[in-house]
Length: 353
Ligand SMILES: C[S@@+](CC[C@H](N)C(=O)[O-])C[C@H]1O[C@@H](n2cnc3c(N)ncnc32)[C@H](O)[C@@H]1O
Image (tube, rainbow, N blue to C red; front, side):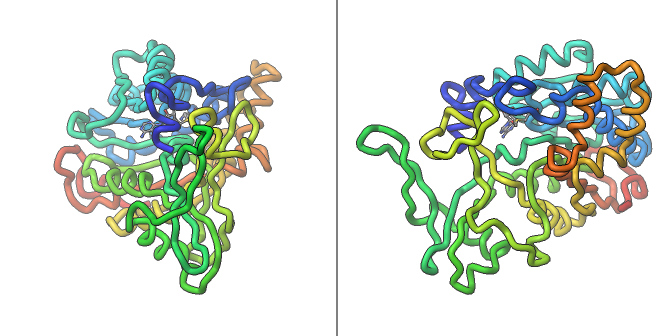
């Protein structure tokens, strides 16, 4: 999955095959217009105030894609929260050089406070940082596994006699798949047959984020689920899917390198990692609920000069049955009762809400 998406010569994102936005392979919320980023800007301004307005402050966007979220976020902050804008540096992180090229152009008007990078070294960031991501975590590679006749197996990919990709079920490549299953798939103990994805990269990513002293909050939008720990059922066939030209692709293994691949995010994993490190986790909510809480309706009502296309795009962000309902949002916040090693956060600056 990693190679199929990220290989710089052949990967779906890495080689610039993916086309995001209306008319592309799929549309993400920031590609629908500036409203989404404007609402995220209000959250960023809130975070800055919660941190007692540090003079230097970073927003790190993972999987920044074409830079549309970062652009509307910065435009809105400059216009509506200029003090936050003055303090802020934005790091747009994307592994794909073609996406970084788009990002660089989109963020040109804010070039004095923006870095576009293929990875981040938090040591280089001054002051506290907040993390944002949209449809990033669901693009992180997962290990596809199944339990059959009480045996745990992993899906490996090989070439068949026609030199086409083919899937083969065999021994798991790492013990971490079983460790993940024992935490999130209690049905493994009672002989059930099911498929699942072990999101090992997402697990490493969230663990690294909450462990970094400079990171004070995380806002992540994605397709995903929560409530496993409360015993809510999951899909027995797992959630991995391939999409191309706005259509699902049935033969996932056969379309490797030629389609987008995603798997639903296990938000419970994020919450449990964060809480175990002393963070506070909000309830997972729908994108529509979150955007409404962050002023999307007022912005729609206030945009008298918006065209019909802009109004329709705005509605798509919150429409039931679409992005508004299917995308979920998780907010995590560091529960600071101590000074961080690098940041300007003081004892009561970053308390649980
Ligand atoms: C579905 S796109 C979302 C783009 C953008 N956030 C949006 O909403 O339009 C996922 C992006 O994540 C990037 N990506 C995947 N793995 C990454 C990683 N480990 N680090 C940084 N970016 C990554 C891909 O190159 C791609 O641009």
